[in-house]
Length: 382
Ligand code: SMG
Ligand code: MG
Image (cartoon, rainbow, N blue to C red; front, side, top):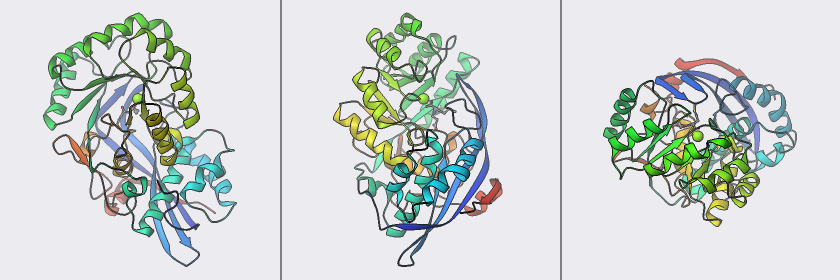
């Protein structure tokens, strides 16, 4: 990875937009049900010393409520305006690699920080005519696409949904589970998709250390992994569970930095890593976690946060790095949205997503549609 696509940039303008995007169907996890997304977009205009002007977009993956992680979209917008941008801009011209170090003394808020870094990355890559995949040193031109399936009220409904995704060609199924909606549902889905389709589960922290014997019952279904069974801070609990259960334990919510990931790996708590750029403060930290995992023989895959075509394009480039050996949650735009805010939404062909090669993060906005779903815009006083 090159650390800077061009020289340093002055941030001329930051516009924050909120958009309302209904989901095509409710998405239920162990922490709640989403029916729509209220998404914060960060739009930056940059100017170089030579007078080159460019702009770029970032997508903040914070949800409406602090339910997946402590961040939530109103809080992210507040911290960007009142804390992150003033601190970031105090030291003058910058590039994307300066964002995380300049903001390091402000605790937490990785999704807010990541959205700023992303917008600057998009802008500087557009100026240099480079694709994100090339900037990252990505090797794959297409990546396998997995789909995340929510908790359903009945097993019949679940199987209908899963069959639909199988028919669309997804190469890997991930099923959300929680106590009371796990063994029977996993058995039924495994029976439906057969022994050869890659299959994994995600508990979003719904179990406790004492659930080891129960989760061991999942071993017979030949799952790729169990994602985040225990609360995010319970690294020791995950290590004990990894020793107790044959199915590999994968961390999602627990991994918020490269250092924390190194500790979790050393403790035996992280046999597989779900890498989500927003959760770890941005794509550059995500790459560092990828590199760490490769060095330690830990398989990684790219998670999803129901992103629009902005975030999904960038995720597809990230997932084209060589350490991403498992299919990610990079499903087609239509998995969640009837219409996307980009002109070239992610589609799947033969179970795969094509890695974008256009300059920037790899999307072009459908500005008319974007305007039609915009609920507010504000220019930050810089
Ligand atoms: O973006 O395809 C997607 C969704 C993937 O399941 C997904 N994300 O814990 O991994 C996870 C969840 C977090 C978001 S749930 C609202
Ligand atoms: Mg998860």
